[in-house]
Image (cartoon, rainbow, N blue to C red; front, side, top):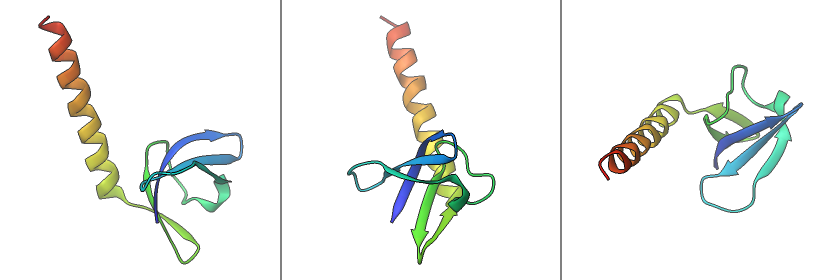
Length: 76
């Protein structure tokens, strides 16, 4: 199962499942050290792992979308 870290609330992390569905709340201590908002995680056999390459790809996609949106509005 894959998740994106949506946000942190005190000692809890709010995770969004990649397949859709409701957000999941987990103890922040269960996440890998250094986990940050928007990181993509894999959850297998009770262990969360940061998927660094997928996180970087998603961040690049979002950045490109924002750039395109900005340019589209700038040219109006």
